[in-house]
Amino acid sequence: MANREKLLEVKNLKQHFNVGKPNMVKAIDDISFDIYRGETLGLVGESGCGKSTTGRTIIRLYDATDGQVVFEGEDVHGKKNRKKLKEFNRKMQMIFQDPYASLNPRMKVVDIIAEGIDIHGLAKSPEERKQRVYDLLETVGLNKEHANRFPHEFSGGQRQRIGIARALAVEPDFIIADEPISALDVSIQAQVVNLMKQLQKEKGLTYLFIAHDLSMVKYISDRIGVMYFGKLVELADAEELYNNPIHPYTQSLLSAIPLPDPNYERTRVRKKYDPSQHKLKAGEEPQFREVKPGHFVMCSEEEFKEYQDKYAK
Image (cartoon, rainbow, N blue to C red; front, side):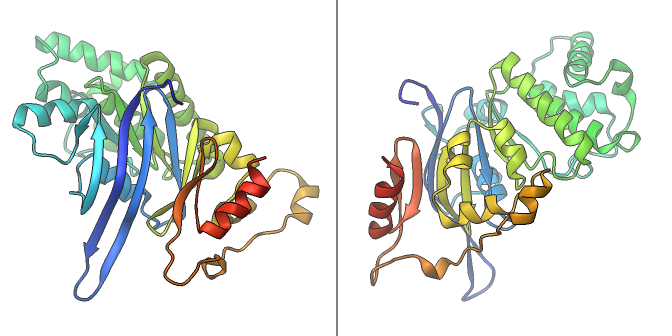
């Protein structure tokens, strides 16, 4: 990764929600990672671990409590004039989890997709606007006849394709896909993921792909980060993470994945993660450390030495 261009840098990001004194929910608790231009970084973990909050904080739907998000060399949460903010909103887009709630039911598809085109003045005439929408619909596997319909006339998979077309309409560099397939039938999930991979190849897109389905994340991602209770506990190349998981929580997640092999399923042992088993000295906080090149793990000093002895050779 040394020679690749960093598109996004997340530095010590925190997102805390005050839910009434003295309660403070640490949805994101001091996480750091980079995303390189043209790659897909998968972010996985169980429900409530902070994955979606991370995506929403990166794109400024939430103001960060602390830390930095740097996109193309500029602080996302820094003060921006209207022109700069508009430019940022064009370069970074989001595909939302719920294809039923994320499309305005009162708007026709042509206007849903063209909303960004109108805001950023990307069409010089009504005819060009219409043609751009037609082209986008074709790009995501729909056709121009769909343009004058309302969202309720489409299936979940078709609605998600419309959501993808809307994100693509402003020609972004970076797309945050927040569990884009979790509300879809299994038969449709692969179609949407294959479409995203194809579009990435054609348009040079960069993705943050947030999901809880590890097998699907492995299929689409170049690297994978694993979150647990607001912390990033492991980050590595997709193949490396699957073949050599180091953090006990990652091992627990992977042990829960069923395989279409009756012999394997009969002997599969589900590993349980117990946070109290970490080897921490009094007052020590675990740190995010590079156990071997490109493979980072949240661990104590003692665990770090053990992991290096076991995995780094």
